[in-house]
Image (cartoon, rainbow, N blue to C red; front, top):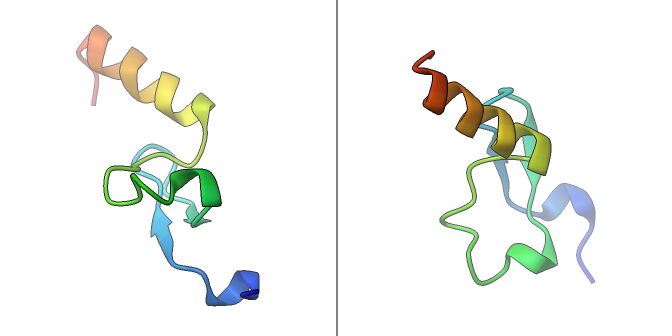
Length: 52
């Protein structure tokens, strides 16, 4: 078993916070851009309204 500090991390495209790898993202880790469903929804909302 790995320690949480040893897992790969990324920075969220919406909020800018770092987040760690999760087992459910194992197959799609390269595609993951957001740390949570909330950030993903916010990014879609911003894209739809034309804001950056």
